[in-house]
Amino acid sequence: MQFDFLEIVASFMVLFAIIDIPGSVPIILDIKAKAGKVHAGRATVVSMLILLAFLIFGEKLLGIFGIDAGSFAIAGSFIIFLLGMEMVLGAEFFKHDSPGGGTIIPIAFPLIAGAGSITTILSLRAEYETINILIALLLNMIIVYFALRLTSRIERLLGITGLQILKKFFGVILLAIAVRLFINNTGITLPNG
Image 1 (spheres, one colour):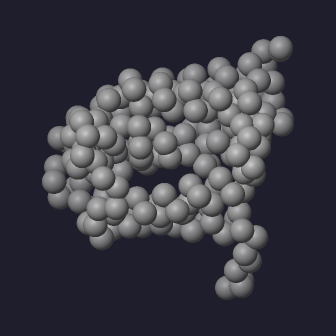
Image 2 (cartoon, rainbow, N blue to C red; image 1 turned 90 degrees about the vertical axis):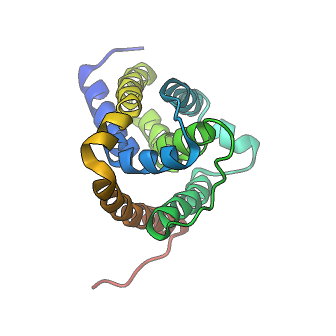
């Protein structure tokens, strides 16, 4: 175990970009509107535990179920695609009928600790020391917690019209991410141009 500041910074930046909690705020607000209260602490802890499990056990965990990282990413792409469709069309594919029903699914998984984050954790594990990835992960989870706690303030700041615009825009972004995840993990090649 060796601490390396550069490894921590590199891991932090990669995880921050993949988790993309600032870009997820409109999605979280949409889920909050449907499900009621979102529990920031619970979502953060569950996300952390999922990512920590993959950091420590990684591919062995997927191997128990006979799943490779690519298949996991494809399954995650379907969930992300449906979230995007909900936002763009105003349809409801996920049932949020229990109190805090959106906290674990889909916020903790697959929004924060999704296929992209898990695949990234597995990739970082191959390059960096585990302790440095763990520190980067903890720093990202602190940011996730505060972003989830501040969603109500962001909601008040943007207003109903601003939220609707962001919701549709990020719904399309989610659809594009889902398609990219699917294509990257199926080996489909698109024609250039």
